Every structure is written in structure tokens, then in C-alpha cells.
Image 1 (cartoon, one colour):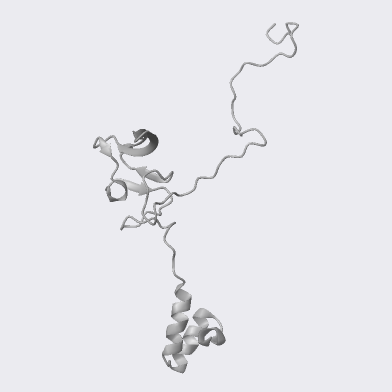
Image 2 (image 1 turned 30 degrees about the horizontal axis):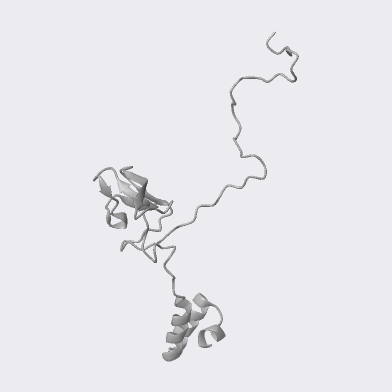
Length: 143
């Protein structure tokens, strides 16, 4: 008698969901996480910043009448030291040893500098052939 209608529309099965993948309803887009460095320094409020001791807690503090998010460390009981802490790491492996974020650092194009150095130096034919194999055409080396 469990699946018999009681006169009020359709009968639902009350068993829990088993198997498959839970997906959000259509039309709802899940936001992509983005790194949040402060200048070029790593920020403990970044979604990718983690603590290997699981001591990082994001709290709301009232500062001069405004609510600000702050990173607190449960292990030391004070504000998080950020990248200078020995237990800090980045999920995306973007935390550099000096505390900078690799997402914020603008890498210079080393190819332009390399080509300028090649123009300045007069290289032997063997070296030019070797560079040609590595880089590509000889014209691109001398331009």
C-alpha cells in the first residue's frame, strides 16, 4: 500500500538518492575561483591559500565601523602570518619561496632578451646551426 495514491496527486518515493552525480539545476552557473594576491604578495584570504595544520579561519572583524574579513590562526591564536608561516601552502602551487604569488608575477618574455643577446655577439657557424635547430629558423635569430 506504500505506493498507492492517497488522492492528492503523485506519490513520491522517499528513499534517499543513491549513486549518480548531484548536479546543480540547469541555468545555475557555479562561480570559478580566482586568485586574490595583494599586489604581488600572497594573500591569506585567497581561496587557494591553505594551512597544513588546518588552523586557518576566516573571521569578520569590525574595524572603524566597517566589517572586514580577516585571516586568523587557531594554532597561535592571532592573525595569520600569511606566506611567512612554515605551514602555509597554495593549492595551485603558486606560492613562491619569497612570499609572492606566481599568478601576480608578470614573467618577462625571455625570448626577446635572448634574441638581443644573439644579435650583439658574433657567434660561430656551428653555434648558429645549433641555435637554429633549437629555436627555429635562422632569420628569427637575427631579426
